[in-house]
Amino acid sequence: MSTITLVGDRLAAPGTEFVYDGEADGCAGCPYRSQCLDLEVGRRYRITDVRENGQLLECALHDDGVRAVEVEPATVRANVPSDGAFAGSEATLAGSCPHVECPSHSLCEPNGVEQGERARIASVEGDPPHDVCHLDRSLTTVELDPDG
Image 1 (tube, rainbow, N blue to C red):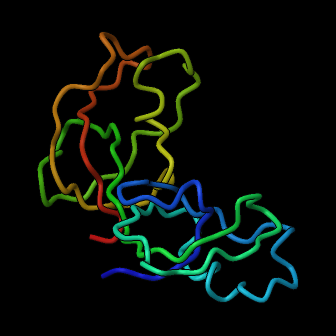
Image 2: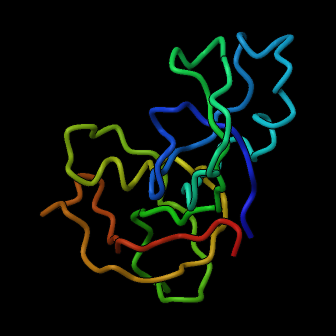
């Protein structure tokens, strides 16, 4: 189900994904607050359509202004424990990882899903990009659907 919201004009393109961070200091007193602040904080979204003939509105945060778009919740690519990782099952992230240089770090601590949050596995992608997990975890890369 899509939702109409406002995003910065430079981001307003179908396929663009973002994680909604909530209200910023510059939002106070804005006449468009209710149209911008209508998403779930911490959730990843994908722009599916830019509203045709939509006005470019002034914004204190986006120097090029904001534009109306349709968004849908997006899946999150992540590494989860391999045991029981199959499409349709629920999983949680394996836990935080201090090894920021690892090619899998962004999958072990992805934006759009919180540590400890249960999410349905939409699809199994396969082996993670790292050769060796420095925490000795057995991981599988999946697409998580936090709303599933």
